[in-house]
Image (cartoon, rainbow, N blue to C red):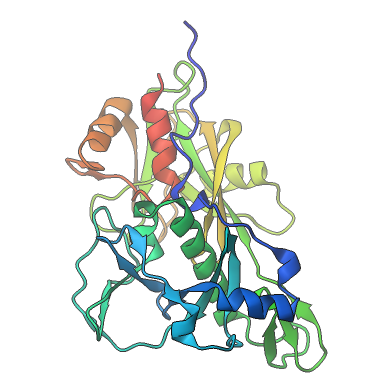
Length: 326
């Protein structure tokens, strides 16, 4: 029986979504006002955290009536599902430290507790714990919030902008130029040694700012005028000094930290080639046998001195798919 090339184990956590993005509604004020009255609101604070319930497995949405009868100018339409419309707004609530981290959470910011005792967590921490609808809502809300925070002035004339199109555009108050949310492509690549169809070892690396023992596959941003495949070749050479062949696409995942989409690939490299680490970016890189990756996966993502990426990242689905092959 011939082995097949491996793929992603599952759909990446942040690629899941069930709501309908209704672009036609975004500039129809009368319709937006009706959608607001039938709305549920996802609040996002300046650290990208939102209130959660049920042990961080569900979003704690607010009915729009709890926010106000009239649609606020800062409300952004996330989409519709059935008879409900979903919105997002910035949160301004007093917090205190002390939120218990969710299982398998990998949050950038620590969780917080509101004055009423409600827990707030960020997308990295709870994205993989949410169902498909909540995961899609939270991912889109964080992407919009990060864009709004970084696009307050016109790129052409420098004048302040006004948020329009229900949060999906920004119109310059000076030259009236319209801008839209940005997405920066980045590649993420699982490199294996090419033994057989799927290899016997995978190349993992760690950044110096990561917790001790955490390793992942390699990633980097696409440069202007560069194809995705060319970026894979360049980034792998820059980060660990290896040439790669057999580049093939695996899947993608939004990664709104602040505004990326991660585009997953697999590639092959020579395990005997010397590793030359990018100074300041890569602290260590090593070839890991499939058996060790499988052991870590069976042990809630870690074993010995190896901690795998959190479940919110496409990197874990890449490693799961590779570990199950061969």
